[in-house]
Image (cartoon, rainbow, N blue to C red):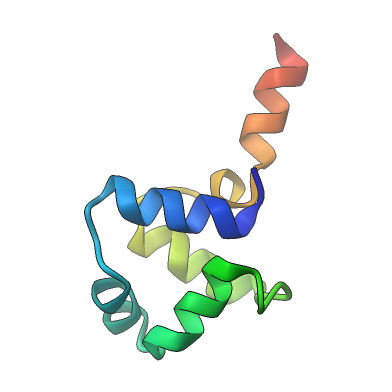
Length: 74
């Protein structure tokens, strides 16, 4: 999975709405929707870090690096 799917899936796992997360990040709900929909694909690294912290995960997990590493490692 990619970044957009991981952001949405983690948000849903935590039972958070777009409104909940966008308020915590101080961004508009539509911007978060565009992140999750892939319409904004070049998300700045500092924003990815903020999203990860808000969603109680790591940037590497959101990006999908840790998942790829565990598959290679197995």
